[in-house]
Image (cartoon, rainbow, N blue to C red):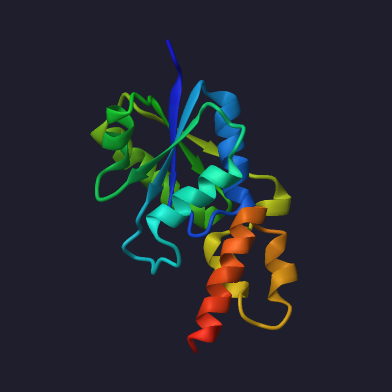
Length: 170
């Protein structure tokens, strides 16, 4: 029987922390579905299609990873429909822990057959988030700071967006 897990996020943009989580999930499970979602509480920088492309480019060689769109539904329902018995969630801080703890219990109420596992990234990337990366863009020298936090392809996409916004006066 194939062991399938789901790791969901907005990935706007994909960070090295996300890549670490995905690599861990790919090593632990036979099949890992990376679910690209829309978070209505956040203003997206990249379209779902752009985020999917960033994932595809950054995850080449991980043959047991599939990328799927996830929108306007409960994650446990998405997991069940895709044959996953596990949802992977990341814990970077005590704030993440409290939020994820509550969500784990709610998800278990909806689908007790789905297990949630938590992974904690190494200290070097534990504070890394998409919001933090986006917040670094703009000031002189931002490129050197951001380059270390995202995969190469993602960095190029961020540079293109920043250049386009500068040219448009945003």
